[in-house]
Image (tube, rainbow, N blue to C red; front, top):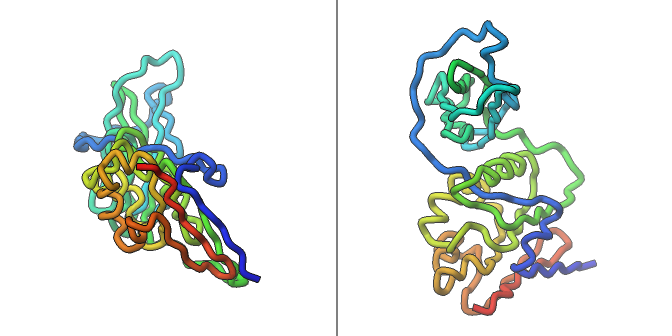
Amino acid sequence: MRRTILFASAVAALALGIACGERASRVAEPTAPSLALSDPDRLLSMSPASATIPIRGTVWINASAPPPAVARRIQWWTSDRAVATVNQNGVVTGLAAGTATVFAASGSRRGSAEITVGDPPAPPPGSGDVVLLALGDIARCSSSGDEATGVLVDGILGTIATLGDNVYFRGTTAEFAECFEPSWGRHKSRIRPAPGNHEYETPGAAGYYAYFGAAAGDPDKGYYSYDLGDWHIIALNSSDN
């Protein structure tokens, strides 16, 4: 039996319960000497305290001090920048297989988290069933939500259908390169995209079509379709721009 799914691009918020956020700002990382973490009153709470991510994968580390500590700006660095880097929002990116310690400092307080970087896990044996993930409202340079959802999707096999507003705010070529690519570019080969109204803040959604290329379909037609197992998927551009 052939089943058909119709995705309209403007329904981004209905993305199977996965609300994708936006992207963290990218600031040059500091370097600083480490500090022995022996005094509990000088510790920052790190969550997660350890994580395993694939090469090019990301994870967000939250560093916090218990009350009544006064919140201060947190500085971040890693023990091995060849293995993993961290930006000033605590977003760690894996670069090469290995382990690295991520440090955070706020005033006299310090914290650390252990990061293991390795290849993505091999697909588990299965029955051949297909998986379609639907997500929308994905990337913004000023938030780390897309890094978090990108890591979530790292562990889920299947085809990804994006439901519009792939990048904020205007869908420019620069925004795709600077906001979408670093957190979601590794999934590009399995993405079947659809545009939203924000892509059309750039005339003709030129940045969107340039980034996704043939995978986005013919911009003059307003739709494309593909087969996925027994399903026939139609990606419909519902924008009136």
